[in-house]
Image 1: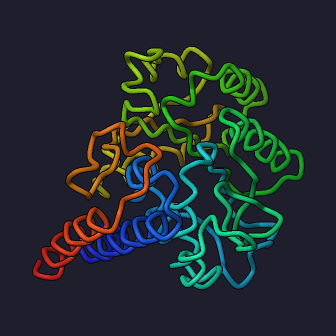
Image 2: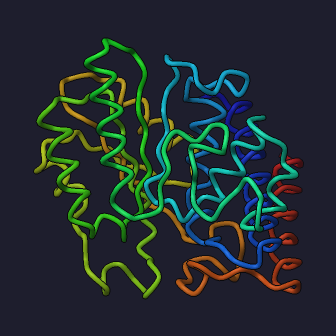
Length: 281
């Protein structure tokens, strides 16, 4: 990835983070921590990697994305809005009665959403079905699915992993957002899922790793997934929950808490500082 492209993605990611904080603050509820940890990867996918078109969101040949950790919908909504699937004004209506943007993704009412998710563990199964459908239909699209590291405590995730390997779904790329925090604390304390890479490898998957907040590292990991050898891919990305907002970083309390007015101002000041530093580069 060239320096110009990387800088553009970094700037876009800051906008996404500002949108996330603004939406959750406006709703007075939501999940900012895990949304912020996934922001860079979603920016990379939608503004660089994936074959998607906001003017033709139902294109049968498009790449698909499933947010299996559906509670981090503010991240996906912010990316879709910035990509032009709907107005950014909708972000201010998050979780409000009668509004389009619900607390979890809804494929029936929101342009650009490929699968309704919310119950943890189910999204990856849907992604496996999409990938299998692509194989049976001789299509060239890729299915991407993002999971939380706490989410992979769910048994259904491993049933899906087994099926993906069995059906040789090398058109499927799972992303595990490994920030090591869930609602009750550290994943390693609540119910350890480690070593994540070894588990997926044992289930017959190709495995890559990356730094979730370095676009060169992200790109290098996704480049590996171009290798088609009859195995699905998983990228285990090391991330920081609440990334970009000083008081939210690596703090489980911000799993599902909205900032008040004072905290919102501080969060936006943190992101303004990052944005200014990028502008001066």
